Length: 318
Length: 155
Image (cartoon, rainbow over all chains, first blue to last red):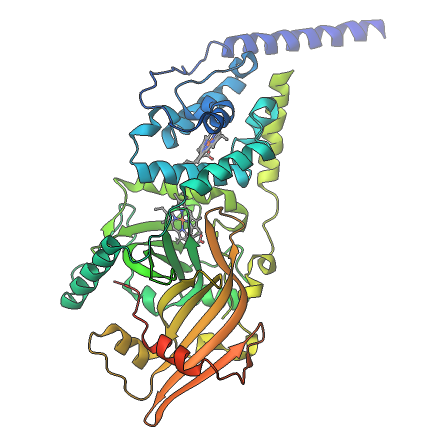
């Protein structure tokens, strides 16, 4: 009896010391997290900036400030990865280098990632309790954004001219030149205008309005309530225009800004959340993205709605 | 200890990430949907434009049949018989998933304008069930408004 206890005790000690040894060894496997200089830090009112500094700067700036418990491997590896990708997609330390419109866009996106519970990352927030965003914080951010929202000027001549220029151009050039293709191989689909709109959007964050078209497969899926996940072959086309305010303040579509596609194919596009993404800008249909990695941006922003197959729009039945 | 918590949290997160997707019925925009019996999507309409009425807090989409759409797009403003326009209007509602966006809320009305050889016909359907309205007071004004619409640029 006593002998057996000592033996199992010994085995336990042996295993424990092996584990300890492994644990100590892995502490030396350390991806480095450097803090490069801050070149163009976010410019925002102090209370607004303080929220981002407290809850986001560990992963989205060059001022990463890790606690001792973040620095223990293997946890540390996960943290290092988060900091690396976090900085890649959004870095507040070089934020002011972005074009003003892009800065605004990122701030609205940041707010919505927080509001939808996607940021700060859940496991991080669990241990870094100080990173929690309170209702009061959200209210501060919301007020800041609301003041920043694009206000529409009635009969804005610059916008009217842009629209007229586009109309004239389209009237004169009904040519069928080769269709443009995005860096990930998705080609522009001109037939979208014959599809059903499944919804429309007024975007007061960036002063645009949109119509979201769905192809036949999408419309059928809506009719039959098979929309989570959407069937392969579903295509959405989202068209965005400038808002153009009339004399009475009512808003029409102005110049065409861009068209975006999402093409469902859970095998072909498995690496990008099951959708083929593409964006073409201006009536010239200039493909967006330097290389195929542009889809990261699309997927990341659509990620908070991953539980509805990455689709934001609640479709309307027609 | 904290390390253990972080690890456990990561695992918990992985588990919750795999939880069930939302049900399709909750994902539809029911309040904005058109009555099922109408079969609007089978009427062969295409989008002409989209607009927002600030004062009445509504948003609208204008449709047309092929004749209407072609004429609205061409620069010669012909008005032959056989055009059908349909203007669907919704109350706006904030998008639950995106602060910064408004989307269609309660269905408010459907207005139809048809051009015939003996003039135009205007019909107004109101409410969630789109019941035909007998109110003709704004008929002329609305007909003119709808026929004057310019199409959105769709290259």
